[in-house]
Length: 218
Image 1 (tube, rainbow, N blue to C red):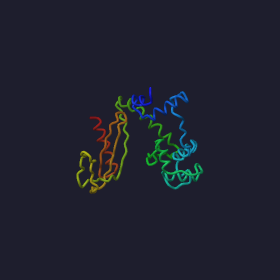
Image 2: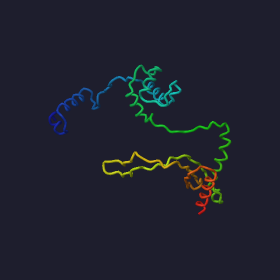
Image 3: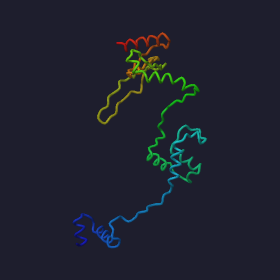
């Protein structure tokens, strides 16, 4: 078949047919020729070191800022001689590929009490046996408080979302004082009970516990 007939039958250009027929005659293969492309600027080891740097705390490297960003990572990587030069854009591409989000954080707390394990043991045992105790009529309740919550009311009504527009929430609000929040969790069932008070005293806490037990008993 002629090159023209093949190009018409396959639906490609005449030049493409010429290239592939010549390649078959020369190499007896229909595979693409090797394409080395540009030489890598950074080695896998350098990328791994920068990723490890992003997963470390800035304070461990003598920095006063709390969190990294791509510009700071690039500067410290050069400072530590991980690379001779790197742009913040390259750092962002690497972090995005590894799904590392420097702007996100999760708060957590570590106990400094040396007797923490000894104190936490009985509580954890009580939680573990909560369902068995509930069947025997013993209620296990965890309570906590959140004092001085600012009670605020929007000046304008929140508008629902419409086509092409998000929910609209008014910025202005008026203060209605502060309230004290008590909350309880029934460990066995997962039910929660909450109530607010104007004051935070033992009398209010006792009243909250009494109302919680009465609701649960009902």
